[in-house]
Image 1 (tube, rainbow, N blue to C red):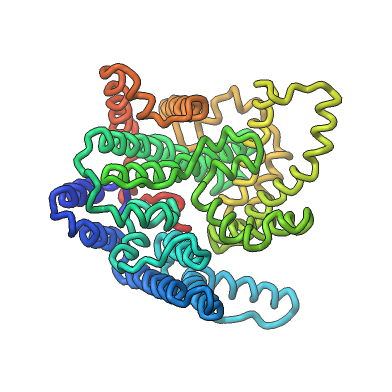
Image 2 (cartoon, rainbow, N blue to C red):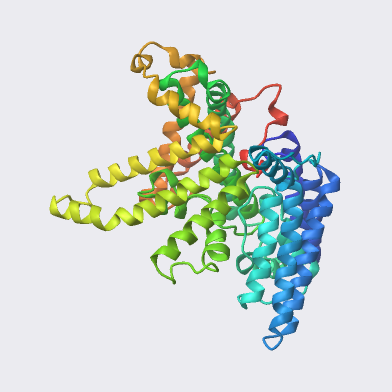
Length: 496
C-alpha cells in the first residue's frame, strides 16, 4: 500500500479513528494488526519474514539480558546468531543473485566456467529497513543501552510500525520502545499535534506528487538514453535526479513522521536541509540521518572509529561507506557511489589543514556568507556528480554519461528551448520550477529558523496559516502527477 494511493487515504483514517476510540489496553494490538495488514497489501507471504526477524531479535535480546555480564560467551553467541540469521535472510533475498553474477564474471575473466545458480525471488519491500531496526535493538541490548523488551506485542510493533516500516526512518529502540510502553497514556485527541502531523503529511505529498514524480520524468528521459543528449541535457538530467531522490525520500519520511505524530508518536527526523551542507561530512549529518547514524554507531565505531590513528580512521570510513553503498542495492554502482562519498571525506580531511593554511595566508574570511555559499555549491556539485552512479544501470553507463557531459558541450541549449523536450512541456516545466522555489523557501526557513513549516505557520495569523495549507492542497490536486501508472508508482527507497 502506497502512501500516495487511494487505499491509504481510506486505510489511514480508519486506522487512526479506531485507535482513538478503542479501549486503551488494545491500542498496541490494533496498531500491530494495522501494520501487518499494511505490509501484506504488497505480498502477504512476506509478512513471515518480518515475523521471523522479530522473533529472532526478540529471543536474542532476552538471552543477552538473562545471561548477564558473567556469561559473556552466551551474550556474544546470541548477538552473533541474531546478526547471522537476519543478515542471512537479507542476503538470500537481496544479494544472492548479485553475488553469483559477480563471481561468474570473475571466473569468466579468469577463463573458468561461470556459476549457473540463480534465484527467481521478489525482493521484499523494506527488508533492509526493518532488518537494520531489529539488529540495532539487539546491539543496544548487548551494549546495555536498553533493557530487553519482555512484551512481545510491544516489540513486534516496534519492528513493524506501519508509518516507517518500508522506508524508514530506521528507528532506535531507546527512542521508540519507551513510547510504546506509554501508549495507554497517549492523549490521542490532541488538536495541535494532529494538525501539525497532518500538515507535515501534506508537505510530504506535495514533495512526492508535485515535485518528485515530475522530476522523475526528466531524470528517466535522460538516463534511459544518454547517447541521445549533449552536455546541457545530461546536466539537467543529473540535477533532476539529484532533486528527485531528495523530494521522493524526504516526502516518504515526512509522511511517515507526520502519520506517527497524528497518533501521538515521535519519530526521528530523517533530513535536515542536506543540499545546504557545507561539506560531505556535513551532508551525511543531514541526509538520511537514521541510516547514516546507524552505520556510524553499529559499523564505524565498532570498527574502531577515529580511536586508532589516522590511517585506520580512513580505512574505517571507506569500509563504512562501502557497506552503506551495498546496503542500498545489489549493484556495483551503489558500491562505487558509497566509495566516492568515502573518498570525498578522506580527501577532504587530508587537504583540510593545507587548505586552511592557504586560506589564512590569503586572508580569506571563511565565515563570510560568500565563502559559505561557495562551500555549499561545491558540496552540491560533488553530491550531484555521485548521484550519477547511484542512478545509472551499470558502472559503464555511468562513465558513458559522465564522458558525454565533458565531451559534448552545447551551452546554446540553454536558449533554444531544447530543454523543453526532456519529458516536460513548457507549462509543466514552469510548474516544476515554481514548486522548486517553494521547496527552497521551506528548506531555507528550516535552515535559518531551525523550525519546520507548520511551526512557522503557527506563529502567523490564522488566515495566512490556512491559506498556505490550502494552497498546498490545491497544488497537489491540480498539479500532481497522476495518470494510468499512478497506482503502481512507488517511492524510490522502497526498493532498498
